Amino acid sequence: MAKRRILLFTGNGKGKSTAAFGMLARTLGHGMRARVIQFVKSDDSVGEQKFFSRFSEVDWDQYGRGFLPIDPQSPEMEAHRAAAREGLDAAIAALSSENYDFVLLDELCYALGQNLIAIEPILNALNAADDGKIVVLTGRNAPDELLAVADTVTEMQLVKHGWEQGITAQTGVEN
Image 1 (cartoon, rainbow, N blue to C red):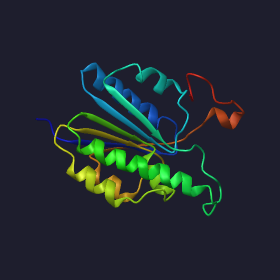
Image 2 (cartoon, one colour):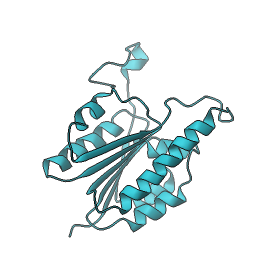
Image 3 (spheres, rainbow, N blue to C red):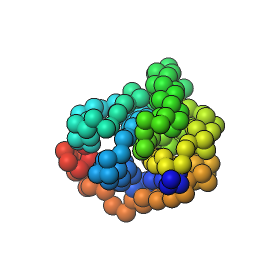
Image 4 (cartoon, rainbow, N blue to C red):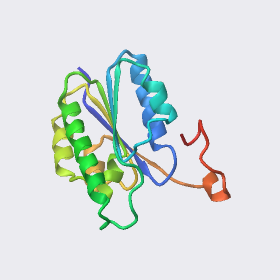
């Protein structure tokens, strides 16, 4: 049996989720079963979801309400926290499930950094995940505790982004 793997894609550059979805494609190519749990995100019309939802081997859910209010004290934040807590419960269940070989927790780091969920339950679930399970975590500002538990960490560094030159989000690139 292969060792449990925990990979983390973080940093302020573009490509964290894109790298994770590349790994999802790789696992499907090997006939593995996958669970995708997205925190914060709420747009089900993005290309990755439209593509990977075609596969019966992929279970996909979004536990987000979209962009967070600028004010962390906003009354709207409770809806974001409730959604993230649902995502956390789903993540813990997926990590302990024998039904999935690959678990992608997209934007987990961002949800943690925005104090939408606590880190302890996810750390416990990661540490308890079975050998053979592949876990991929994404999001900006990964906390030190996740850096410590991951066996592979890649930091995406922003050098230049089209948005800075006035290029808006484009289908096939950003969504």
